[in-house]
Image 1 (spheres, one colour):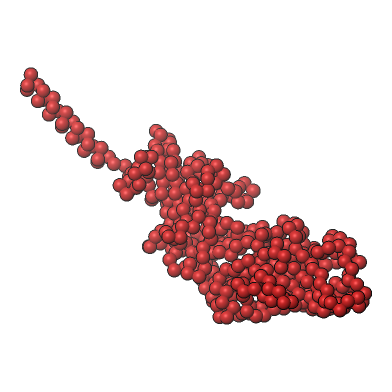
Image 2 (cartoon, rainbow, N blue to C red; image 1 turned 90 degrees about the horizontal axis):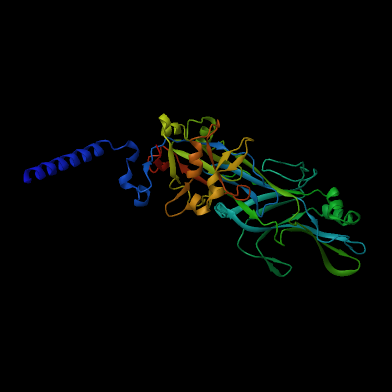
Length: 440
């Protein structure tokens, strides 16, 4: 009996040893890296961070810019992204209908004021001097206006401005301190025309048939790299308006009448980008095989990143089914590119719908923003997304375009841009961390 027990014990030990040896020798390639994965992820299943990704920079389509909370105005020569210009088209309506300008009104001056709400790029670079011109629009401004839209306008400006842009200090107007603003004096002949147009001021709609709006555009010439800035203008501010100053025979006091912007007032921003000096960007726009080292993202209908996973079917070969637990896309921001020009506070992953328009993916629709991500992590200098729902759908999707597109949030009213590391970057590459469970 003693010998029989010893024999069984030996066979059990040998069997256990062989089982462990076989288990270790059959370790799957998909589990490589599990030893450095957080414990909570190891419990979820298999892990890989070697999924092939192809990413490159492409031009963004136009973006909707009408009736934004903020409009952008100015020009900036970004040392990396080249020259960007933003102009504003806007209607102005009556502060009150049927105004009485009194007996024999005479124009004193007309001033367009634009209230600042901040800026993007180094406002004081080379003294902060910038130039702008204001033109009369001669074509109606209508709904659903995009960043590449324009309207006809008189080439001869109604007024111009050149000088220091100061978005911080108040300005003294008629002895009263007002918030920071740009003030552009317009031609007095235009003011006289307005004074003589009281007959069309019985309603905003009638007035707009005669006076369709203004076009405000930067006119600074020969901006060197790093020069210029993009100003945020607040259309809802009571200090964004056109004021007509006049006097009449009824009183010696100077009179004022305002033409204002209301929430329903038609207005939009027009953007242009010149990448001719941005050598790396120009190269990627011409050759989709580039983008391994750096990728470029820009608001204001500038640039976006196309991301493709070309070999996803390898995950489900031979009828294997898997359940995606996590699909984390890590997008590092290139070092040394954010010192003066901050990246977007949040970016978004979208897909193309059957109509060719951007569509939200399921994860942003059904999950919380914290789960989905896309926020800029300043300490780590990266963006991170988690999109397991959409990644799961990609495994069964038969659409010809399975790509994702990285875009800036609020691209019609923010000017941020950033340089991202590509998949082949030697420092900290873009990558996908995939955790999944094999079902069969």
